[in-house]
Image 1 (cartoon, rainbow, N blue to C red):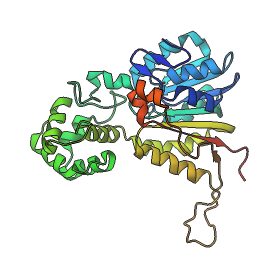
Image 2 (cartoon, helix red, strand yellow):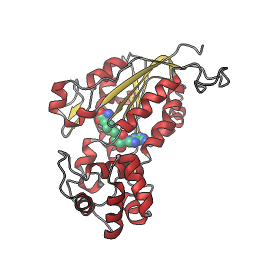
Image 3 (cartoon, rainbow, N blue to C red):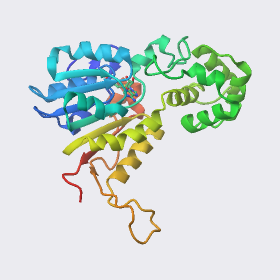
Image 4 (cartoon, rainbow, N blue to C red):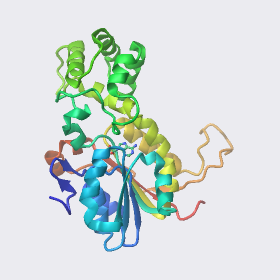
Length: 316
Ligand SMILES: C[S@@+](CC[C@H](N)C(=O)[O-])C[C@H]1O[C@@H](n2cnc3c(N)ncnc32)[C@H](O)[C@@H]1O
């Protein structure tokens, strides 16, 4: 099924209605979907901005690009799909001759399709290579990190990106068990390091999250990209960001707060020396979460948080 719910088999766009209505697309508008995935949100923006609105959809994952291209083909020249990181959005826009856009969306993290594809290595539930790269043609894989890093560096990754309390214990077990090549081998090592736990979630969850974030440099990319993306917005245009865990959401919240303030000097400083000027106003003081029905139907939606900000007409 496609259309009004952003749904195709195996993939549902999270917070679909909320995102589209807060972006409020209009015909003649230009939109940037930084994380195309299966093209669900892009499809929604194109529908809502008919007959003339255009969308540039980016994704690092060549499979997501192929899928989105096929899905959006019906929109002809209104939909442009490119493979690459949203960190390079400005270059992609320049190629099209777009100076600024009327709305930007980031729907962060891994897609349910990527989790379902065993050969991508994102899921501990399926046997697959330890890869975890959004773009499987570039950069070190999870196997490279797991087999090459020092025990202390591995523990730091598990602690920082997985908030794993037993990071040292798991890192020690991993180093003892190397070389590790598959998702299930790694998951077994983590489970054996932790023994029986009372947790509802699989003990390997946090380790897999941490490695995926490290492999794709996710948090650093988000922190660097958001201010650059805000700079690409037309006055009164909105940026919407959907985050799936507290580490991502904290970065979005803090970046929006900083960019909505005129002065970002430390509070103890009596006189402003930073010269910073607010560039946005926050539309969602509290993040929007999925309703009970969506949470029931789509487990991925349970942790989703949507934050939206609007570009100011002119700098104060
Ligand atoms: C949750 S999915 C997006 C789903 C999409 N909104 C939809 O409705 O189908 C996130 C996507 O972001 C992509 N991604 C992650 N980091 C990226 C980056 N730095 N640049 C571009 N795409 C990225 C992933 O490959 C994945 O396909």
